[in-house]
Image (cartoon, rainbow, N blue to C red; front, top):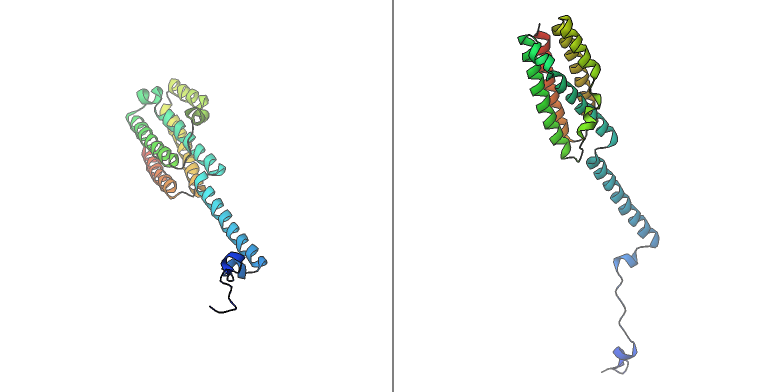
Length: 198
């Protein structure tokens, strides 16, 4: 034992120098910059995830408008005045519109439901137009049901196509966009059938 070493140093406090950690070697200013950068990355990630999963007010509004159009078109195409009194070509067109739009609505409801966006039935029925029903009844009484219903379908399908396009342009979800694209393609086929109906 050397005379310079205290054999009881471990008791009296002679301790070997502590190792310096990496954080102790970095200046305080560098620590703040590093923590600030980490905080900024976390905030950006939270904002990105929130925008992806929230649906956003603008997206919800566009999707609600689209589903309102779907609800109104399905309602018009299933009216007794049309399905029982129209010509064979009007009945066929009405049945195709009813089935296609109802099916597309169900698919869109499922796609947006996965994103946490749901609408109540009463919110979707807001655009139900008594004036349209009255117009159909007046046309039926006047014997002009075919041209009247074709004009109504033309206007409704045109507005529906526009709402599909607007919702597609706003939506960020691939699944919702794919569903809207398929709905748009189906609507194009309905418009072609409409134009071929006399």
